[in-house]
Image 1 (spheres, rainbow, N blue to C red):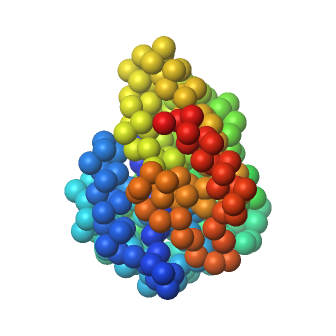
Image 2 (tube, helix red, strand yellow):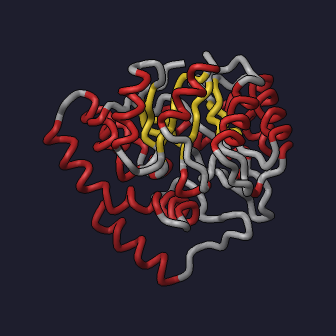
Length: 289
């Protein structure tokens, strides 16, 4: 598993009855790959995983694996350790190339509990795993020392999606572990800063609507094209920041719809954007175009 490049945390399309639209899912996953992304990551927060039943999650993974010829990285999110283990094993059976392991839903444990949870899920599979650290969204924070402990215990922990928004985490993880883990930026509006600090990949959100631009931005930073990267980043930033607010799912799906690439439909309890919110996003898009 090569944890480099742009990996979309893909949205989950729903039909009018809020069932998963597998035809739309196949088309969207293929578009991401055709535009230069290195793989796809279904079932993340942006994929509305908390609203999906276990069998729906497995069906989504199966569809994605059949749809693309690049790695499918299954997000593993659960409210219990047993459920997390079961999903990890189901993802491996479905043909996924790797896992992105989230902390447990709802319960915010201490360091010992969270590290034990991660260890149980990572240890349940032979697949390479990426640890997802997002203390802002999930209320648990795996600090660099904890990351180092998990890496020492689990050889198949090979990457981390760092979403604390603190770019110093990238440098500290590298100080502790060198190149033992690939570091991917998980916050859209920190991609340039994160890569300049040593990250090699991007788990992206707005890529769902702007895949080519996302791939180009990553490539410019990777290749040291500073002027080109800064110009593209400045153009992109107002949209990238839509990934960092509570309604990021609704916002990104709406941008997709405005770009003719998907539907703004979200599964309740989320509701679609109201008129004022839609108008504000359209103003951003008018500038971006």
